[in-house]
Image 1 (cartoon, rainbow, N blue to C red):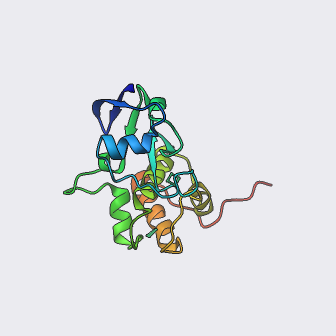
Image 2 (spheres, protein in one colour; image 1 turned 120 degrees about the vertical axis):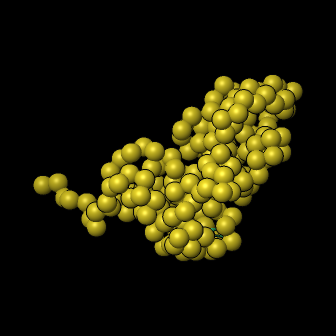
Image 3 (cartoon, rainbow, N blue to C red; image 1 turned 45 degrees about the vertical axis):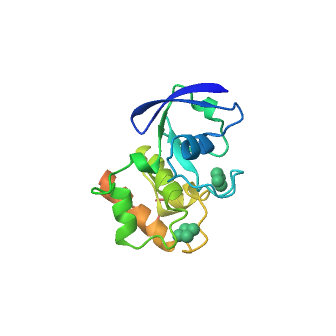
Length: 166
Ligand code: FES
Ligand code: FES
């Protein structure tokens, strides 16, 4: 067993797990943060996306031990039931999700993207979220929700097209 000390959603945690345990497995099975979903378990679907020191990672692809000493943020740390995060509110307002399975990963990937504070086009948002798969929606409403959240949080407007550089 390996002892791992880390911060999850602002709380100090120490967990003892077998060394081959993934971060996702530890979050779900040892710490009961089941918001991060187990989809493909091989890095293809993004359902397990969490933030590690502010960067979006597929929690199924890294070992829990690699999160030693780091700050992990899961969907549970984003808001309370009484107060949604603006990304969750934007998704709700446009009915971005259907079954919701992809939602936690999609929302965490969106948070990492918006936190970078870059000027983004709609196409760049689509590209940035291309690693997060949704089997239900066709993505149109999800991208609409991400655009709304981006504009709400940053105060920036998404340009219709990016100006061409001569
Ligand atoms: S469960 Fe991690 S990428 Fe699919
Ligand atoms: S809403 Fe069902 S997988 Fe995205």
